[in-house]
Amino acid sequence: MALLDCDRLFPQDPKGLGLARALFSSIRDLPILSPHGHTDPEWFAKNQPFENPAALFVTPDHYVCRMLNSHGMALENLGIKPIDGANYEKDSRKIWKRFASHYYLFRGTPTRLWIDQVLQELFKVDRVLSKETADEIYDQIDHLLKQPEFSPRALFERFNIEVLATTESALDNLEHHASIAKSGWGGRVITTYRPDAIIDPDHPKFLTNLQYLANITNCDTTTWFGYLDAHRTRRQVFRDHGATATDHGHPTARTANLPVKDAEMLFGEILMGKREQNQAELFRAQMLTEMAKMSQEDGMVMQIHPGSFRNHSLDIYKRLGPDMGFDIPRRTDYVTDLRSLLDVVGHDPTFNLIVFTLDETTYGRELAPLAGVYPALKLGPAWWFFDSASGMRRYREITTETAGFYNTVGFNDDTRAFCSIPARHDVARRVDCAFLAELVSTGRLLENEAFEVAKDLTVNLVKQAYRL
Image 1 (tube, helix red, strand yellow):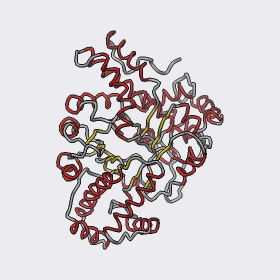
Image 2: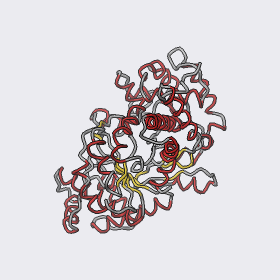
Image 3: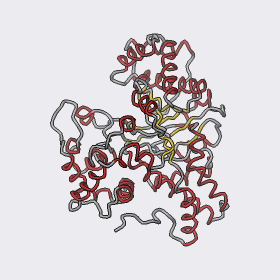
Image 4: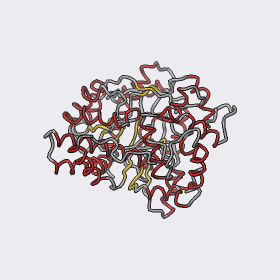
């Protein structure tokens, strides 16, 4: 039994369906470019087999864990280890059976679409995952994971990945990227500079992190200019390990461009701990602009991922730590917040600023109009909660008429779930082909242009935007 409809996500009218099929056929086998994600570079450095099906599909996947938790299943029972060393489930088969018994919860979600495709196309599963089929499917996957052709590097090549960017803290030693480079393996795995831990005064280890930053850069991070030089030093290290981009996950998109003396004074107040909450936000805002100025200097692409209320559940944060799936979208004001940064770099056609949003209402009202006029600004693809078939469709509908296709940057999967990467790109390609087919069918795009746009959205815009 096939788990997937070969015409999934395509139009149902004969003309649209035929054209969507033809468009998809022209791009289906193009290489995958994954310019932003959170896969673990250690997988490719050590090339050890993935541990078991639960460790691959369940424990690290926020989409899976948050849905199961929403139905009362404790994250500890899914293999998440508490901070205090309390008990948690270590039996991977039990974790898998809990997941399989509740797989029906994912009906209609993008998670179901991705996992079904991975099960069918990668692991040759031809039965729906359920309580009854859990053991059989577990054994089938577990057996295959032990085969050489299912090692991380072998899968990387099988997935036809041309380049994959991971995301590391500015303080990371990048040992796994160095190991990959020395190994002689031909897969291109690059890093991305993520400086949140040394930019956000609300980070619990902010001051400790600044001291560590000083130690690894030989810069005086107790002074404003020494602190900025430390960033430049680390950015160069990341560039030496292949990085072409930075990434910034701030609570808001607020930016500022203070006079030098004021910025220096603000930094001093933050170091002394004599700050108020609005000063922390102002410092983050100033640092986004400083990062933009540095990108003008060194050519790194700048990504901003704002608008998430991080670690919404205080109980989960205290028990299990950050990044446990309790990050919730919030309203974001891009028109006001980005103005200071755009005054500095927005008219520079050589500067690439890629902005994402978790607030869909801003696409048509704010982001598409901004990207449609500022040379430096590009729209990141539908992200996180909206990297679904419907979310990506809405994205194209809301942004295309104002910003066009060529002020966007293609698709990136932004995932920790390595095996889902081909499935996520497959969904994006299908959605784009369906949208293009509709434009042709309704006389808004020439057919030959649709084929050009399909290729551009799949590979060309990604390479151009991320300088790959």
